[in-house]
View 1 (cartoon, helix red, strand yellow):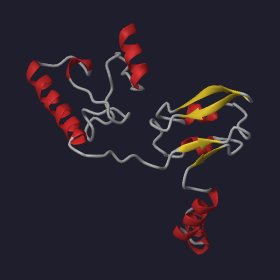
View 2 (cartoon, helix red, strand yellow):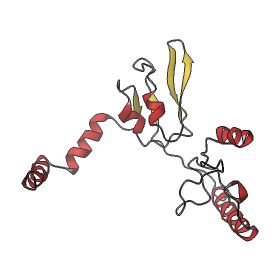
View 3 (spheres, rainbow, N blue to C red):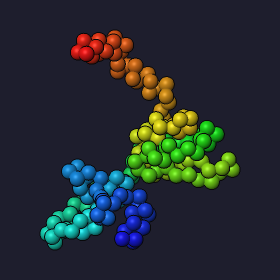
Length: 169
């Protein structure tokens, strides 16, 4: 319905094809959305019997109590940031972001991508998709990432794996 879509838009949560709210993961996070701090229970999830609704409400309340029992909440420092000078407003980052954390904003330089640091999970999909490298992950540089890859996989390992593939062809 229209009100369900409005709520989903405000909280940046997803809907199922049947227009019920969709959890982050059926088995691992059955009462959580992909958006941190937003929880799900009851028939907003899907039609269910009252005992199941009550159990799910207990689960959601337990997750909320876990958050509220702490003195502070620690958030990830690894979020994306846009360099407005390099951004060409192509929208590749927006389509790549699975958390709806990126949107266009009006700036003195025209419409440019902007990252909502609260919604961003720092997965780097936008960074990888950006054709001009206008998006970077805070605390990570491309050189640092390439060095990590080089440390994990040596050139000899790559050659050995390629030889093994070619032998099977």
